[in-house]
Image (cartoon, rainbow, N blue to C red; front, side, top):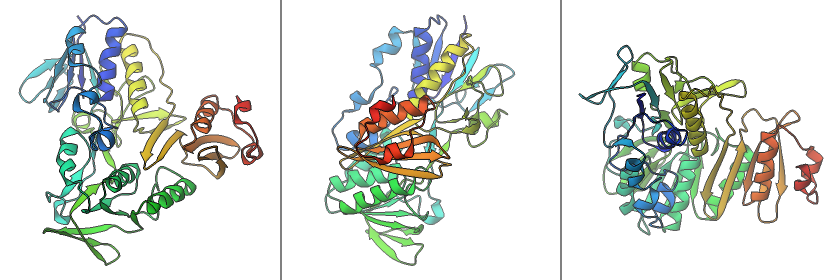
Amino acid sequence: MTHVLILGAGQAGAALAARLRNLGHDGPITLVGDEDAPPYQRPPLSKKYLLGEMTRENLFLRPERFYTEQGITLRRGRRAVAIDRDRHRVDLDGEWLIYDHLVLTTGTRPRLLPAAAGGDLAQVHALRGLADIDRLAPELRPGRRVLIVGGGYIGLEAAAVCRRQGLDVILIEAAPRILQRVAGEETAAFFRDLHRGHGVEILEGTGLTALHPGAPVRAELSDGSHREIDFVILGIGVLANDELASDAGLACDGGIVVDAQGRTSDPRIWAAGDCTRLPCHGRMIRLECVQNAIDQAETVAANILGAEQDYHPKPWFWSDQHDIKLQIAGLSDGHDSVITRPGATGQSHWYFASDRLIAVDAMNDPRAYMIGKRLIEADRSPLPDQLRDPGFDLKTLL
């Protein structure tokens, strides 16, 4: 019986295990996770769950009985410490598990501040799992002061939640502007205005030099100023959990390198989800989004069973901030022009590289997002003049 061992019980690992059974795999499946909870959704953690609008049980991807019913052995609270590729086994800190196929769905972890800069203070919070959110929740009380470090989506979403709870929010971004790596200037300007309009103080081109303990904590900023705050939320990016793979001699490059079918440099070992660096439109990238984790994992499941299918990523993302839902289709890096189009209830930004549409950012404009997504997936591009005309019906492009 072919044993599939999956290391990482997040969205990708859970999707892969379920897909294997759905496709008819009748051998043993073991799903190993380093948290005590069964596989759960992460996006609602820092929003609905933190606000008390979603229970812990509602976060779970499947009822716990699902894994028993499907014959999936779920090993919770266990961490793999080594892979023995020659003997096809994994060390769970003293317990060895034999595999026929090994799948790494180990995800990512937040970047942290060094201890020398105050990163080890109890008032510093990173957002990754249930335990992190449970530790942060008591801090969110009206009138308290929070410093958010990082102006990407995690930091901006945290700022929106904190303002909703009545906190005073200062957000700093070391880059020249917020959303520097992930969105164009137009989208950054939209969200800068949105957050400032909700009372968030945003300082761009400003980093954190050090945190000094006390009540309040004293934060030294790179512009020479200092702020007194009650606690800190970090949103300074994530790192791929690829050390286990790297230590085993697998090819890694800021993530576990896989081919179009999800194979690593060892034919018995596969990888899927946020921890991977995968081919996408002629280059190797990491995609940190739920849909990629699910789709890539399900493709790997099929390939373990011999499908020999290539995975073709269709990047899309979303973010909820204040009263705005941002929906993103495609990847905007490499664009050379942007067209802003007003919508019935929001607006959208359309990114072009030469004459080719490569991405759409839609703010409270689901129609523009849906049409843009379909056009990008079909590799079709509207004419710029069509987008500039507010009277033009985008649906005719389909």
